[in-house]
Length: 329
Image 1 (tube, rainbow, N blue to C red):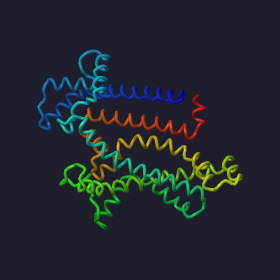
Image 2 (tube, helix red, strand yellow):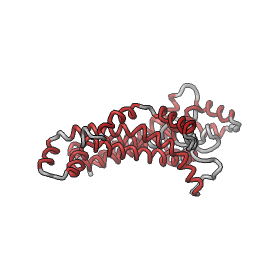
Image 3 (cartoon, rainbow, N blue to C red):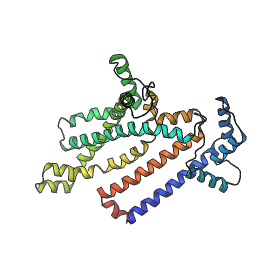
Image 4 (spheres, rainbow, N blue to C red):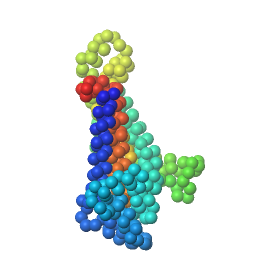
């Protein structure tokens, strides 16, 4: 329990620092970001009132009063999940923009990432256990895949499916002739549009997970406790999973924590190539249009997701390797 509380305290402090940094970001921008946003609103045909200007200044922590008062107003807005209006999608509230983008990213990027991690760790475990076998011969290919950037794989798949085998949609999240909902037609269209982005993520990342797990398995198999387990006559599967893989997977668990948190941010390059309506594409639109309210909301979501994922994995890590609890005591 002491270990959990200590970890929780650390992440609470980290979350507070992230919130405070988010408060200070508009103050680090040269010039007046509020005037820039108001000009953007007028440019897209919106009318600007003094009340809107005051609301934007309060939301960005640039309102009236001293710094402490502005910080208090900012925290109150966060507690009410009020991030203001999006400049890119004016006059849509930032919360609505984020709520529309998050499900696309969580379903597609989350499932594809989880699949690549499970597949990579499984293949890496088998390759390391049977060194020199057929599966181990795939390591050079896995190294090549790990070095290939996302956008190259995405562009290659776009070429193959548009010029060679024109079977799948080339972009977007669904056929816009369908209404968003749980109808069979819409879900089928969403799955069809998500195949290429999902394959891109899996192909680009599975090699790295496989290579890392394989190398750790080779190193772990030389440890005394694995040799002792084999000398006791335990079943090979028990030795592989219960002794070797359980310890070899620890670095992968730590890496998965970071990956799991950044699932919320989406795969920026992949979503740009396929014009997929997820968080990565939304973040690009926010940066391109100087949409500070939307950027702040996305930044906080990514930060909290990474912190939460790391906290959960820290707890799992302590279960897998009890030595971490003893070291923290």
